[in-house]
Amino acid sequence: MTEAGQEDTILIWGAGAIGGILGAYWARAGHPVLLVDIDAAHVAACNETGLHIEGPVEEFIQAVPAATPDQVKGTFRRVVLAVKAQATEAAMKMLLPHLADDGYILSAQNGLNEHLIAELAGPQRTMGAFVNYGSDWQGPGRILFGNRGAVVVGEIDGSIRDRTREMFDLLKVFEPDAVLTENIWSYLWGKLGYGAQLFATALTPDSMSANFADPDRVPVLIELGREVMKVAKAENIPPRGFNGFDPAAYSDTAGDAEARASIAALAAFTSKTAKTHSGIWRDLAVRKRRTEVDPQIGIIVTIAAKHGLDVPVLARLVELIHEIEDGKRPQSKDTFMELDKVLRGTAAA
Ligand SMILES: NC(=O)C1=CN([C@@H]2O[C@H](COP(=O)(O)OP(=O)(O)OC[C@H]3O[C@@H](n4cnc5c(N)ncnc54)[C@H](OP(=O)(O)O)[C@@H]3O)[C@@H](O)[C@H]2O)C=CC1
Ligand SMILES: CC(C)(CO)C(=O)C(=O)O
Image 1 (tube, rainbow, N blue to C red):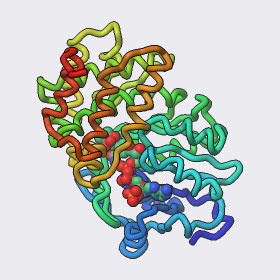
Image 2: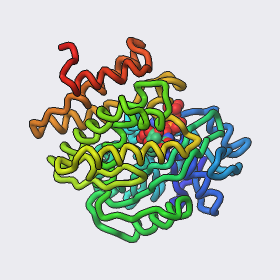
Image 3: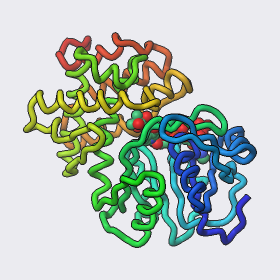
Image 4: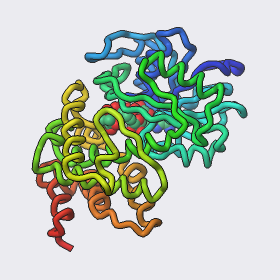
């Protein structure tokens, strides 16, 4: 599909909601891009009719070359990995033969995938990113761009290199307010806090905003933020805020008023998107597939245990998501309120 020697083409591995948007914007701006996805129908649609970006942010159709993994030839200097976290290892095995020795992989994912990428590709070939824009893969060749959101790039060792500035400039093509950081882990841990809250919203059929606005659910949402921030502190990471999520509001020195204000800000931010529900909700309710709960939330429980910390609400959240995945529980407010029982110490042993 792509000839050897085309090292400057940006390879986007995983061309769904997040990768597809990046690819469409970069291609429109004249950057050479190749989308790679295991969904053959999506690849065919991108090649035949172009990628349709839909929704309130911008609507356009962009021609972008696309390939399935087996069709990719040659090596590339810049690879963006945008698969779900649980697909990282399999995708890495497919893409590593195509990564130039002096190239890098940018993780445009939720979670701490940069650790696994660094293990497999080497820390020198790993770059971190935090993305909080909202998008949904709708079907072959169609992606909803629901809302703009924070976009941050940084090296995993905190250095700022020519390649980091180059990627920063590329991200600004797509998101003018993108940020270049010397501490990408701060943002990734901030997103883990927000991510835990989003996983809880996916226990119900309700929108993200309706969950954040429900007074019954606020204590649990606050506690999830607090548990994640406690673990971040033990890891010596000072989490950064974005788009209504204020990590300081969940610290051990903050009171309920600060935490409630952050939840209200999240209710407001999530009310202004065409992507009304999280990707987790979508995996469960629409795509009927397993979620990223183990690499995103399970990993926090594991890290907490290493520090001797108790995170019972996070641990129960992992169980409840698995029970929904396994068809043992519905997405309902009752399921959400199982977390409240843990918080109040009234859960059955
Ligand atoms: N969507 C959003 O609004 C946001 C998502 N994120 C994060 O971004 C990451 C990507 O999520 P998102 O774009 O939503 O996910 P999508 O499922 O929309 O896109 C991922 C794409 O990668 C494909 N894929 C899976 N395995 C491989 C592989 N081995 N090689 C090539 N392609 C593969 C998938 O195919 P198939 O579906 O057939 O498996 C799918 O088309 C996740 O970590 C998510 O949490 C972060 C912020 C916002
Ligand atoms: C923050 C959000 C909701 C995208 O905006 C997300 O990360 C998700 O869908 O999981």
